[in-house]
Image (tube, rainbow, N blue to C red; front, side, top):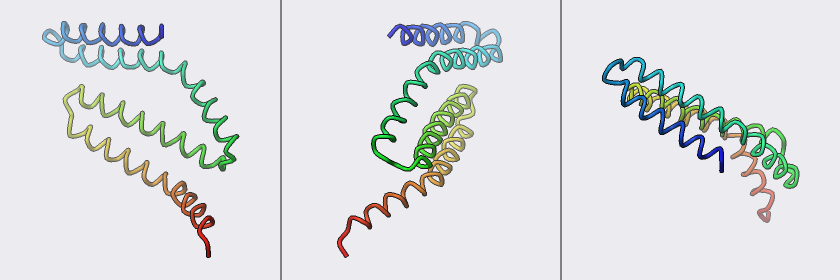
Length: 130
């Protein structure tokens, strides 16, 4: 919970600093926003190991193929990176570029999810009576 307060504090301070600096130097406001976002990301990285441990335990218990596990983690990473990049694009006033980044991320996720979908279909087909 303490990290959440730090994240919120950094975000609020970053927003206030951007509001103060933007009328004077809009280029610095963009840099402040990006640096604030990176600092927030560093605080969230500490939780990633806990998330990976839980996913590893779930996949070990379920017996799901390890390749699917890595695909799922990659898909999650792509989703977060795409959303973060689109947020930066929106912050800099490039909303059309942000939309294209989001579209690109969704297409990549869809392509990466094909092996998972085929695995699920194989499992369903095995369960159906013949």
